[in-house]
Image (tube, rainbow, N blue to C red; front, side, top):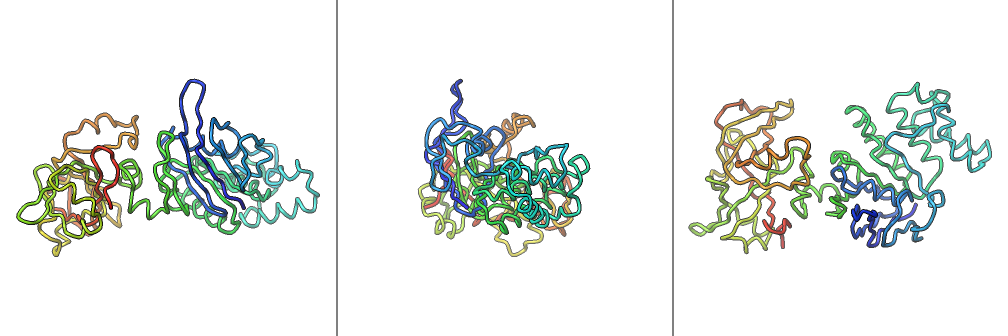
Length: 394
């Protein structure tokens, strides 16, 4: 095992495009770190720099305390699992797994023992004589993992290894890869655009956008305490509802205006975020997670002054819950980088109302077109400076 350290690492191309900017990050020994971000954000470039497949423009990259900027990929003691698995079609599963050992002239008995051990871990024992064309997608993925394991590298690098699998198989393989990493204990750097993979697999998640590291934290901390608007909008599904709000003191209490509607801001909000006091009398960006908005008809004890009214526009019944969408006339706030610009983002960003997503209990009887009242847990809201986009906390 070895730690991987980025110190002011940058990657710039001859045309002036900077894919990664001033990256400072440390992946601890034995840690499973997932880097996540939208397409083109610099995550794969970062992984390829660790692998030695991309040159570093400036800064220092260390593996196990050794600076490897100028070290050839084969001498870095890393193993990489590619998106398409890159298996040799003419070789059997056993030969694919043991290929790197064969190149290293490993004695036959040792090679076979290591291949058998990896096959047992990955439940590939019964298909060692098959060729890749005879395997399912999940089996091919496990063969690629086996090829990495037998080398006993200092670092595993995984570049979106589940992206070509179907949804059900992705869930199965997430659990298997996570369990395997725990068993082997090798430092692992995994990149993906899929936040669910990041949140369910990682010890820590590094969020990157436009080549700039946004936040690094354990998954739950990242979800509960996003540092800025991009992280808030990117992490969570459905994503956080973000809108303009104005904080005002009325009759000795603070209220928050959301368009033409008002909700009270309980004192505990200011206890948790002392810096928010400075925004009374000013505008803020407020973020409310869908799970903090519920059907008021089911929340009869919820304070009357923390409710909103609207009309249900869409109801997605998922069996265990309902995702309900409705509009309020507060001005929406967008982190445009967190939107897919190919899927109607321009129309979304020109909207005058905020389209709000809420998680209702499955027993809610709400239907499309119903007038609804929703209970908002304001104490769980997130607040951001409207100019800098940074979270308002201490």
